[in-house]
Image (tube, rainbow, N blue to C red; front, side, top):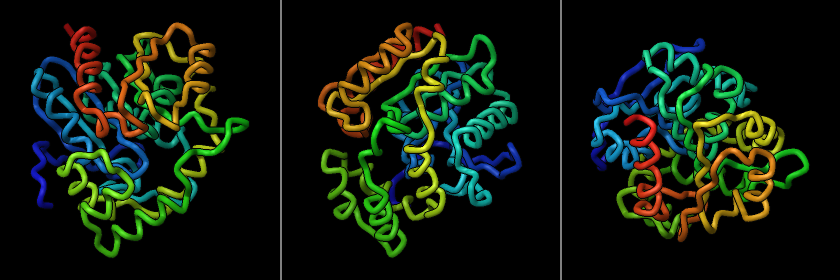
Length: 272
């Protein structure tokens, strides 16, 4: 990989799978970052670095079927499966009520973990632009075919310029990084998860979440548009929803400064 990654590679076994993670040192508190549907751990390095610079221990897993984490049997990409991985990883790594930052799929996983496995009280949750698609709520905005096109380009060898067609606002480093790691995503992992964006209802978890928690949405996101944001606010009015301007669904990539300006105070306030 031509892009330098500052995290240390580690492997642990949890929930019956071998998991690969990146770890960043620190002793101020634990932070777990859960990436999106086609985002191996390395793609969140640029988020982990400023958090670890504040003294936090940060870990980022390759989600099941991505990166160097094992591929499970078919049909094992439900939110309950991912949430069980998170629970097992937290136990295996000895994380103490970590701040959990989840983007997209990772945000849905964080919510499911908090409801299905989380202690009371759970650690702070930061849910970044979770897919609000689901039964009766319309399709996920990025189509199955769009994901397949990107995956197949990656597997035959893609470039930052090709990736830019899909993500025109991204910095060059992140384009190169995605070009380098996207091919590690198993096709079945992506397709089954994409189908479950429309089969599983995020709102069933969202309405059960308790504070401390915050939802961050891209101001121009088609994944959490204004109508969905209003529905989220109505379903769980106790959880703050913060809008980052000049950002679509890929909030930290589209407007890194705006995202970090929101994120770091949330983490520091919770951990002192």
